[in-house]
Structures are given as structure tokens and as C-alpha cells.
Length: 487
Ligand code: NAD
Image 1: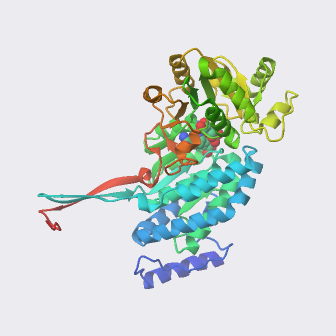
Image 2 (image 1 turned 60 degrees about the horizontal axis):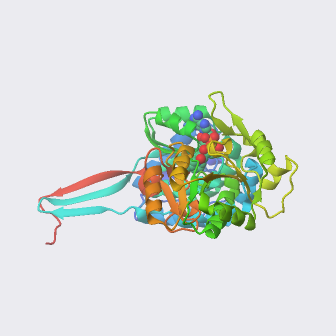
């Protein structure tokens, strides 16, 4: 019988585990593993979490989850999460360059900022606070328990950012993960996942805490939905995918599409609005679900806003150029719905404008155009650095146009205003998960704003700005008859 060195390593480890039971929660694992050592998986030859077959990826993550909850303590989770942050920090430049190369979308420097945000501002296990209640009838504890193995589907727009973010959030809650990454980002996603797995093992954590298949596909998602070992489906991406997950019958966390409108009302500081909207709408070439996608500007502020957004660097398209770009960038589906031409999603504005013979300065990040409220650039989630601006006669008209453009996604919206009534009224009407006043919408996920960061904004299923808590089950422990009370 042929037996590989990896299989021998796995057998030795299993024997050692049996004769040396973990004492302090620190598992019996070698402290340092070489970069190219294979993860010990008796079920198949996964390589640092990357498997050929989804069945093996599930099995490995399932075994890792059993180990993670029975052999490790909360302190171990904290140490492993810290190791993930350190590892990801060391790879930021490499991964950001590779994402741009592989997906052909976005801006390197903005990807660095996104990575720093998820690495530094995704909460770890410390956010899982136990709740205790005592009274005449005893002591009640409610704790955040793991679901088990989570299937996590990641988008092409934030590939490694979502892997880092979801890994920290999900494993902090005691879960393990099988990722199904976007096929257009599979190489950089696999490299990221393998590096994180090596860092986890080097920090004393179990192998295969996070796994994936080398070739992601829809069939794998079906198999995960059918597997009793997968306890939750978490999807970050478009609504087609989220709706598929919602039909699986499993516990599902759906983070779907947005088309965030921004209102600039008659009381706004138009200089601030122009500066912030230019920054937000051009961030990573507008591929983020929460980036400003269309502006509704009230008559009194319109000319000042249009002047200032050009002053900070935006290129104003002529009506003819707007027409040409619409034909280039927008397609219409059979049902009449407008959709982005994927060839131009996330491209630099200079590259897009070159197609219609327009040259802009190298530092220009955004084009703007003056259009009607039902223009395809307003209605489609186009994810390009092209901001349609709609002139509105009144605040009420701006509100109704913004509501229509958001399509009921209830994802993200913003307002520039000094009027508390307007700010409140629009918030109540639009009902978005993220609502930002007088800043870029990215402030709503902690990038230039208060609060923690996530790349999984779960609007459709209601968890909102996800963190470790979102991926946990609440469990209650009851000690009756006043036990353990001190008063
Ligand atoms: P996408 O929907 O094309 O792909 C996302 C993931 O879903 C990929 O892994 C893909 O392989 C898979 N997928 C696609 N269609 C599927 C289906 N029918 N069944 C099962 N899986 C399917 O999205 P994308 O282009 O990668 O990302 C951009 C979209 O994601 C935008 O609509 C954006 O608003 C949204 N997004 C939302 C969030 C959020 O937190 N709410 C975050 C990032 C992106």
C-alpha cells in the first residue's frame, strides 16, 4: 500500500492527539508549520484549505469545527483572529495588485484602504457579550453559540476583503467556513485563504478552519445547500444569488445589491457635498454596493453643486457624450430592466471615456452627467465611476426620485442637508440599512466614520452591518432557585 508523507503526518497527529489530551485549551499542534506543508485532512488532499471536491471541503471544515468548539477556548479564538489580522496586513499590497489584475476592476489604492478597514475594524470574539439576568427565580445566561459550518459566497467586487471580514466574524463565533468564491477572483481568493489558514495553524489553531474548492461553481452551492453538515448559507453579492440562497430552506444571511441615491437639498453645504460625493462615488471605481450611484439635487443647490464637483475634479459629460456612454455601458434585458455592461464595470473613467474619444487628466476619477430621473444611468446599478445628477424642483421630488432609483433594496442612501426635518423624513421614507448624513456613504461601514466595518451588509435578511454576533445562535442557560446570586 502506498502512503504519502502527508497521510503519515495526519496519522501521527491523530495518535498524538489521543495520548496527549489538550489541557489548557491550547491544542496539541506543532507551533510552526512550513509554508508548503499540507493541511492534515484524512478525508482528502486539501492544500491549506483548498480542495478539489466540495464534499471534501465540507468534511474538512466540519472536522475543524468540532475541534474549534471542543478543544479551543475563547482566548484561542482571540489569538487566532490576531494572527489573521497580522497575516492579512503583511499581504495587502500583493493581494490588492492581484485583485486588480485578475478581476480587471477597481483602484489599487482604494483596495488598500478597504483591506485596512476590514483588517483593523472587523470585531473579533470580544463583541460576543454574554447576557446575565438574576432574580427571585434564579440566574439566566444567554450566550452566542456557533451555528457550525457556514457556506459563504463571496463577490468579485470585494474578494479577499470579504474573505478576511467573514473569516474574522464567523470563526470568532466558533464557526468554520466553506467559501464559494466568485470564479473571476478564484486565484487571489485561494491565495488569501491559504495564507490565512497557514497563519491560523501557526498560531496553534486547527487546520481547515476555512476551506474552498479550487474551481467554484453553482453545483457546489447546491451541494452545500443539501449537505446536513452545512448549517448556514451566507451570500454576499447580487440579488440573483441571494434569492437562490433564500430558496434553500437553510438559515440564510443575504447581503444583496444596492443602488444608493444621495440627495443634496436646498440647505446643503454644496462644497462639502461635491467633495464627499466625488470621493465616495469614485472610490474603487464605484464597484462597492454602498457607493453613491446617483445624485438628486434640489434646484437651489444645483448650480453650486455642479460647479463644485467639477472644481474637485469631475469631468462633466455633454448630452451627446452621455448618449454615447449610455449605449456603451448599459444594456437592456428582455424584461426591460437596465443592467451594466460588465466590460466596463469598475474600470477607470479615463479608460471608459477613451472609448468615446474623450481624454481626461490622469488624476480625474469621476465623470458626471445631467439626466432625467428615469435615465438608465440612474436606474441601473452600473458600478462605474459615472455619476448621473438629476435636477429636482423640490425636496419632495428628490425624495420620490431617490426612492424609485433605490428599487426597494433598502441598502444604502445619504443626504447632504442642514435641515433636521429633511434628514429625518428621508431616513424614514427610504428605510435603508445604511443612512449617512453629510459624508461619503463609506463612512457608514467605518471607512472615515465611526463604528466597525463589514463587507457583508445583510439588508434582505435584516442582520445589517454583520459581525460575529450575526453568525451565532442565541442559547439560554437557566440556573433555577436563586443559585449563584449574591444578594
Ligand atoms: P454576483 O451576484 O455576480 O456574484 C456574487 C457571488 O454569487 C459569486 O460568488 C457568484 O459566483 C455567485 N452567484 C451569482 N449568481 C448566482 C446564482 N444564481 N446562484 C448562486 N450563486 C450565484 O455579484 P458580483 O458581481 O460578484 O458582485 C456585485 C454585486 O454584489 C452587486 O450587485 C453588489 O451590490 C452586490 N454586493 C453586495 C454586498 C453587500 O454586502 N450587500 C457586498 C458586495 C457586493
